[in-house]
Length: 502
Image 1 (spheres, rainbow, N blue to C red):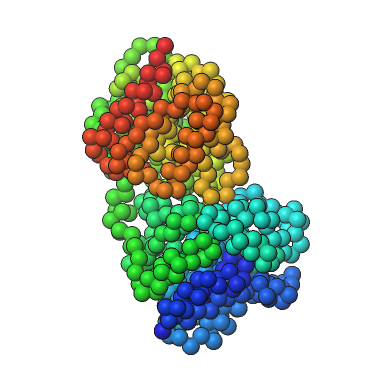
Image 2 (image 1 turned 90 degrees about the horizontal axis):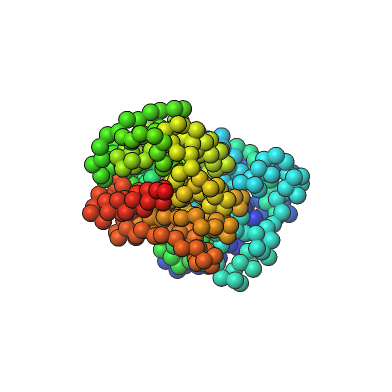
């Protein structure tokens, strides 16, 4: 007999699992939806001293009263913090930990680190009074639940119920650091990723490939994954599908990451074109690939995506794809420029945008570059930085290009700053040429941002040149060397260079 302990996130209690619990019980499982101190029908038990340790103890006591031998404990959102704390103290009772659309907190991390809305997180870090709270965080208004994760798929009546039954959340539970001995890290684990909230297996694999040490433990064969095509609250939006996934997780099923992905990650494989070497000059965080030409030449600045964890080597400008693009552009008579910027975390977009702007000015000041003929080419999550340039394009910017770009912040990124929304920037872009390379097999959550951008372009009467890549993958330049992908690179490069002529 499997017993599921279900632990929800901020503001909610055991009531949020009602439909899911019914489905699991129908399968023959025992189900224990937890209501933590200060939440649900236990809201009156909270006080200024209620903290993460309070909630850990709540779960330890619950675990001790469950008779079943096979206990699967599920943590959603904030709930993963007390789940890990309790599992660390009762590892012999836990058969599997399920991370339900949430992060992988480490020892010493407070749950505030998982709050997706960056501005709200900063307010709560600086002081409760600034957030309009005392020792509790007020319940979000009906329309503000998106600040905590995508509400995609939640029926209207369920969202209304979420708002009606929510309780102010004790602030101390988010501020107190999680303390772990490490024993819970040895337990079998499953991640359930909600693509409508911006999470996917492909994203996890990408971070593993980058060498981020926080993700290397996910290569363990006891770690499995599932995806759900819904928003952040699958217990409300897709309870049937979530029940099926949890039952499979309890049985040890699920997708397992390929250890070979970390040995030869996709971004370090060879560039799909055989391009001639060109002289490369390195100045600070900028590399210039120089053409065989007299006099100033136009330049193409390539802007990588991310986040790329600090300390990862080689850095993006030494990745084969960017070396390849720089050389290819230089072989056709323009200066190819690659740059390392500091998008190490989702909170770093402002700093990364400043780095890109400084790199562009450095390039335009180089006597071998025609300062009046520059193109900017953005890749993947670097696409958000394009909004600055699209909104108010300077006269020397002849073209903006984007390959498999992220063109709107994903729901779980917490970026509420309108500055990094390329679709909104189109309203003031004017006649700036935009070349967009779109891959057919894009991640669902990223493809949605591209469609949002193209819809906005149609609304504003903007003609975007779209180069489609049949069967193309995100990062196809090193992942997918085919005739179609090679042709897409040829077409995109030649289109961008054509806008630089004259």
